[in-house]
Every structure is written in C-alpha cells, then in structure tokens.
Amino acid sequence: MPQTFRAIPGEKANAEYRELEALVGPALSSWMGVEIQTQQSFSIALGADGLACRAVFKAAVNANARLAMANEAITYALKELGEECDLLPRWNKLYARAKKLAKRRNAIAHGRAAVVMGQPNDEGVSHGLGARISDPLDFSSTPPDPKKQLVEGISVDQLIDLANRFHRLAHDIFTHGQEMGAALRKLRESRGQ
Image: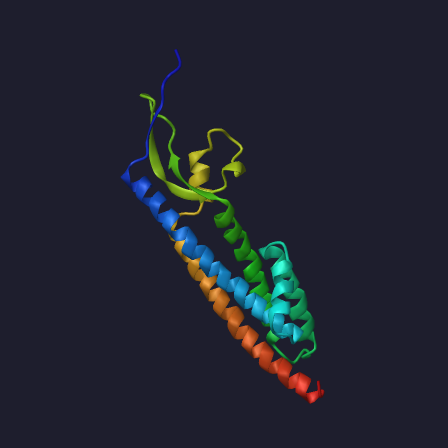
C-alpha cells in the first residue's frame, strides 16, 4: 500500500508566502517607474513629446523590446554630442543595469509565490522550509527540489531589495534624461534646429 504524505507548511513559511504576495504589486509598480522614465528618455532623445511618441514606445511588445528600442534612440542621440560628453558611457551603464534588472522583473512578473516544502520524513510528513517566488516550469524534477527552489527563488528580502533597486534605477534614468535633454537642447539650438 502506498505511503500517504502530509504537508505542514508552518507559520513561518505561511507568513513569508503572505508577505511575498503583498510585495509583488509594489515591486512591479517600482519597475513601472523604470519604464516611464525610459519612455521619457526615449522621447527626449527623439526630440519629440506627446502622445505619438508614447504610442510608438508602448507599441513595443514587452519591456525588453522597449528597453532595446530606447537604447537605440538614446545611443544615436548621444553620439551627436561627441566623445567629450560623458552621457553615452553613463547611459551604457544604466542600460546594462536595466537589462539585468529586467530579468529579475520578469522572474517576479511571471513567477508565483509558493511555500517550499521539504522532503517527507519517515512518517510521511513534509514541513514548510520557507516561501519563494519562482517559475514552477523552471524546475526539471517533480516534485521540485526544495533546495534549488530556496536558492534560485526570490525571497521576501530579495523582493524588497529588488523593488528598491528598481526605484533607484528609475531615478537614475530620470536624472540622466534631464541632463541629456539639456545637452541635446543646447546642441540643437547651436545648430539652429
């Protein structure tokens, strides 16, 4: 007769699960700040404002496509300023940060919070080890390896850190965009454009 297993998540794991669920929305809202500031920088690079520029930006199918499209426009515009301007190397660093953090954003947006259960003991009881956000399709074993889930999944502390990093990135893109706008206006005025 097959052994019956029981799962006991435990208060700590359940509390982590509830906290993860509560933090996903604010983390993704912080990422939207990155997209909004990237769209603003895209508009500045093109020398255009308004709904048409936003529509073009929004037409890109996903966040990665929008980042790549903005990178092309911003890089092109900043090359006009010449090598003596430090805005292009600074943008390249911001873009690298954005691409790296976009992967983490995707893990949050496309993952799900779950209580990570340990292996059943001799009595067939499995206890909760914690909670993580992870993509259940990423795990090759069934059931998923709890150690791998704990290491590769996103914990509460990591989610809080990511939300803060998204917020800082949005601020840094905003600051860069303002400086880029001032430099491009000055250049275009000097050319009589």
